[in-house]
Image 1 (tube, rainbow, N blue to C red):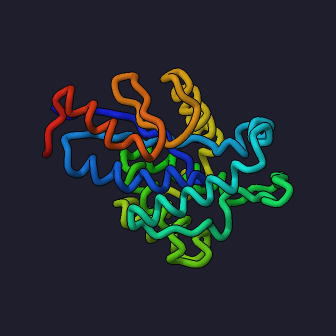
Image 2: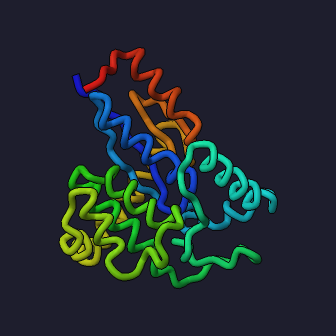
Image 3: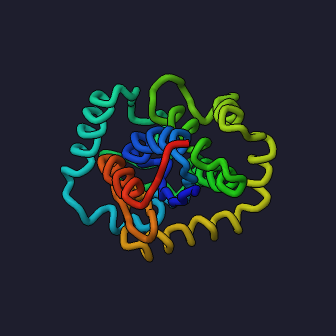
Length: 216
C-alpha cells in the first residue's frame, strides 16, 4: 500500500533546503507519495511576526544551517540573491519582490503536476548550494525543471497566466499547515500528525514504518 504525506516547504528556508532532498530520497526508496505544499516565507506572509523575535535569531539560524549542512555533507551558502529582497542589517523588506513570487508560483505549478518535491529539491540546490551564480538567471531554473521531469516553458507560462489562482493555493497550503497543528517549515504531515524540522525526518520515517511503510 502506498502511503501519503504532505511536505510544507518554503523556498527561502535553509532548513527546507536541508530537508527536501532527504525526503525526496525517502519517497524514492519507500512506497510513499510526498506532496509538496509550498507556503510563503514569513517575511512575505507576515513580516510583523518576523520582527518580534530576538535579534540573535538570524545569526543563529545561519550558523546552525552551516553546521547541519557540514554534518550532512550538503553544499550550502546563503542565497545570492536572497529569494526575499530584504536589508538584513535593518530587516526591512522591500515592496518589490521579483524573486520569491516567481519561484513559489513555479513550485506550485510543479506541485499541480505531481512533481513538486522533485522541483523543490532541484531549485533549492540552485538557490542554496552556492554551486551556481545568479540562480534566477539564464537557464538555471529551466535545467532544474527538466531534471525534475517538467517542461519549464509550460511551468513559467502557467505561473504568469494563473498567478492569482496559484497564490490562493499557496494561501490554502498555509491554512492546511496550521490546521495540522503547526506554523513553520519544513513540516511533514502524515495522518494528521506534524513533524517539524529537518531534524525530525528519521522520526517521521519511524512513525510511518510503525504504520506499515515498506520499501518499494
